[in-house]
Image 1: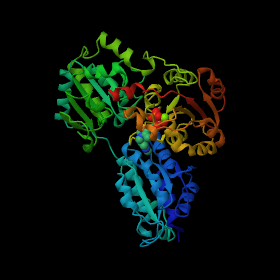
Image 2: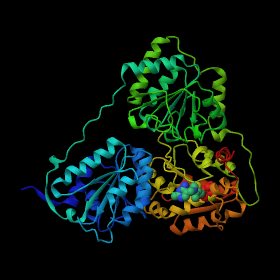
Image 3: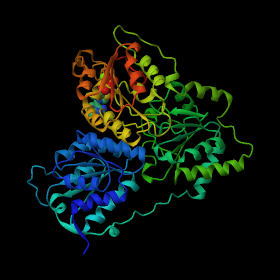
Image 4: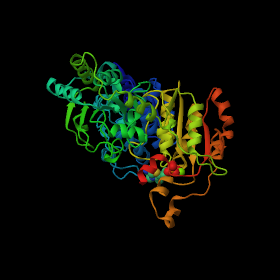
Length: 548
Ligand SMILES: Cc1ncc(C[n+]2csc(CCOP(=O)(O)OP(=O)(O)O)c2C)c(N)n1
Ligand SMILES: [Mg+2]
C-alpha cells in the first residue's frame, strides 16, 4: 500500500513537483491545506495583505523568472479580489497559476458561491476545475503546464469537498510536461523578409516581450540589415549597451526617437503586437511598411495591420535572416546606420538626457529635477516597476534600466495601483537588485497595504511617490475647470502612513531632503524606504503629447 493523502495535499505536492516558483496570496479555509501542502513540499510562501496584491506579485515574479508563479486564494470574494491582478497577467502573457478553493459541488446557495470558471474566463484566463479525486493530479499538472506553455494565467478551482477526499499518492503518476521545441519559419516567407530588409534604406527592428529570448540574434540581425533597434515598453532594456538602439518605442519614446521611427521605411516587429501604446495611436506606424514575426498566430495584425507575417520563433527567424543577409552583403549593409542617424540615436535615446525645463515652485520639488537626481543616485542594478497616471512619464520612461530583467511594466491593463505589489513580486524574484517603485499618490493610495507585506518579507523596496494630491491624469485630460473636484484630494501625509507600517520614510520638497536616502542606500536595505515627493502636477512630457 502506498501513502494515502488528501486531494488538497496532492494538489500542493503536484504543483511543487512541476516546479512552482513561489506562492503568494491570502489563505482562508478553502485554500488552507493546499497552500500548506505547497509550503511543506518546499515552495516558499509570501502572505499578501490583499488578493489583488498576491496576483500582482505572482505576475511580476513570473515575468522575471520565466517560470510559473502561484497566487493562492479563498473562494468567492477572495477569488474576485485577485482578478484585477489576473487581468494584468493576461494582458502581459504571464505564466501565473491561480490556486483557488471553491464551494463544494452543487452548493450553489453558499454565501461564497460565484461562477469562478466564468469569472476567470471573463478576464481572459483559462479555467481548469478538479471534478473528482481520481483526476486531481492529472488536472493539476495540466493546469500548470498550460500556464507555462501558453504564457497565459490559468485559474485552478478546487471544490472543498473534493479537497477532503483521499487518494493513493504516486509521484511517478505526475505527468511530465510535453517538451516544446521552438520552430523556425518556412523558407519562402523567410526569403520575403530577407528581401524586404535588403531593399530597405532605413529599417527599424522592434522587439517586444516575445523576443526577449532572442537578444543576441536580433542584435546580429540589426547589424546585418543596417537597422536601428528599439523595444516596446514590455521588452524595455533588451538592447541596453547597443550603439544603434533607441530605448523604447511608443508613448514613452522621446521626441527624437519618435522622429527616427517615423522616418523609417520598414518596421519589422519581433514578438511585439504593436498595440496602440507602442504605435502611439498610429502616429508612429501610419503609412509604414510593417512586417510582423511571432510564434503566435493570434498576435498577427491584432492591433496594427501588417503587410505580411512570419510565423516562427523570433530568435530562430532572426538568426536565419541574418545569415542570408550576411551572404548577400559580404561587405555589410549600411541601411539606416549612417553617421547622421548615429548622432540622432545617441541624442534621442534616453528621456533622462533630454534638456527639459525645471519648473521650481516654492515648497515643492520639480519631478524632472527629482527624477534626474534619483536616477543618478540609485544603483543601475535595479528593477524599475512603475505605476501612476500623468507621472508615468517619469515613473515609466525616465528611470534607466540595466537590461530586460530590470523593468516590469504593469500597465498592460492600464490599471493604476498595481505598482507596489508588482514591485514586491519583483523584489522576491530578484533580491540581488534594488527594486524601485516610482508611483503617483492616487496609485499608491490604492495599494499601500502591501507595505506591510514588504516589511514582513524583509524587502528593501524603494517607493517614490510623486504626490500632487490628485488624479493628475484626469486633471490634465479634461478641460472642465469647474468639474475637477472629483479628482482633487486634500494633502495626504504619505511619509506618516509609511512610518505607520514600520517603513523608513521622508517628505521631499527639495533635493537637500534626500540625505536620509543616501544613508539607507548604503545600508542592508531590509525594509522599504518611502519618499513622499511633494510636486506641482504639471502635465508631464508624455501627457503633453496626449493633450495636443
Ligand atoms: C484601477 C483604475 N482606476 C481608475 C483609473 C483611471 N485613472 C487613470 S490615471 C488616474 C490617476 C492616477 O493618479 P496618480 O497615481 O496620483 O497619478 P497622477 O495622474 O496624479 O500623476 C486614474 C484615476 C485607472 N486607470 N485604473
Ligand atoms: Mg497624483
